[in-house]
Length: 464
Image (cartoon, rainbow, N blue to C red; front, side, top):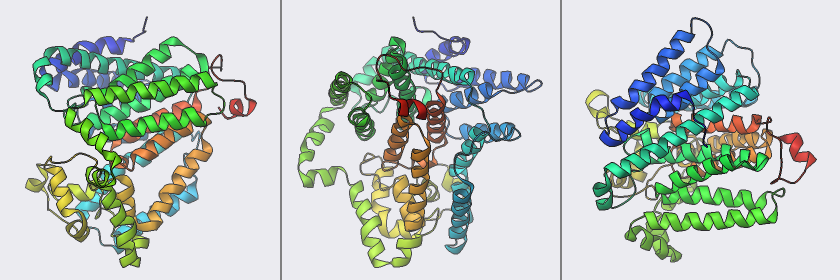
């Protein structure tokens, strides 16, 4: 049987009510009770278990800003503990911070753009600081894994009851955008990434212990992400798994075959859950013209990385200024991204947006195109706003993570890196928190011992 905790039993009736009614209050009730329990424990001592559990549950509620406050507060609670590890070397952090501030001042980024840059990116230093002060004991690892299990089962409960109670609406739906779990309307991409990151916990556990329950949870995660029908993210996930299966020398040949078959089945599922017109568009992409039309984002990449740098060397090296290019902060300040923004804050449309992505952005935000046509991503944001210096600094950060991580954890890092070519995920606190917790779990997961699946390899055992 699948083991569940008291938290799962507390949340499940509210998740069912939310799936049927779509009233967010049903999810705020158990979250408020979780916060109340944390405050009660504050009179004694708030443990790492409580902090990470609160962060994980704040990821799944239908709000993208509560997680920012939770992560910052969690960092403040943990910062008084001694440093257990350094996520990045101090010189690299200092150089990055100095360049970001200097770029902001020299390029005269408007104060509102600067504010949203800080809001959207603050989760990165906060999560790094939090995790650097926590000791990942076997007890904490087990607690994190159990919490992730409970959350994945809650998403499955949501999917079952939502499908049962909205069957007629689903049948008339032109696509699968409604599969977003408890994350809220139009949050299918964040739902996808949380389930994808969670799947790596169960995959690593299965490869170490060959436990059928871990494989069951892994299958549930893969099933949930495939149900979103997100072609781009599904392709990135399956490509990452393919890289892992083919390049991991310690996995036996028959398991490589199983991995390839799994990928094939997943592709079939994605093709089935998507409407006919999407499937036809994908099949037509063997033609270069059709592919460039369907994935118009590639044109923006060519413009940002090739055309504009060749015309303006200053742009090539330093960019147009942080918060003034393709970033989520820059797009927010246009007033088109958040409906209530223009009513409360000054609108600012940078010259870069006006001259390079204006029409594409208007079309996308009007709902007339998918992410393949969206003129933004984290990679585009860094290059357009910070130039080659920013892109090199980002690459160095990822290089350091890859160098300092275990062999399995590298696949988690690569998956996250690939997603940055698709959307501005560096500016989503939920994505950053999910990635960081899973990465540190995989790096610290030493309480399991390899059994049937992995061949003995002393080098790998030393790294893991």
